[in-house]
Length: 151
Figure 1 (spheres, rainbow, N blue to C red):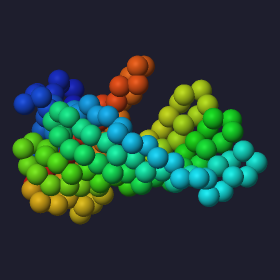
Figure 2 (tube, rainbow, N blue to C red):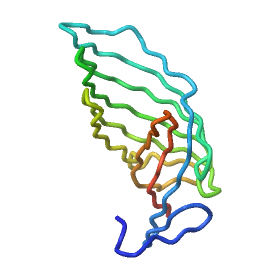
Figure 3 (cartoon, rainbow, N blue to C red):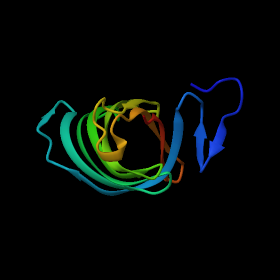
Figure 4 (cartoon, rainbow, N blue to C red):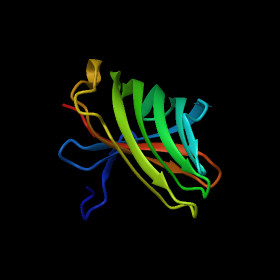
């Protein structure tokens, strides 16, 4: 997405032209609640979890997450989730949903995709599109980076 030149910035966001902007928002996980595994066989546990988060920064919002995961005894895992964020982005109020899909290997290697669910934007965020990623620092500090377009 990023071209050969450095992105410009505006109000703390990096803008990549053609209406694509980047919001950067540190967040906290306020609650992470696991239901009992609904399948536990030979070291493979299938679980359902509920999370709530608070975002501060370019995106000021709260969210709820419903997640399904497979966790192996060796430390590997995979998950899918739907996260609904409600708040303000670029001064516009509304909500939108992210689709999560990811894997983690025992050595710490991860893979994840978090696109905005098409058509999920509400209020002043109707028509939003894009994709997110999360950076987790060594100290556990979480930051969301959201590359998005608004009509």
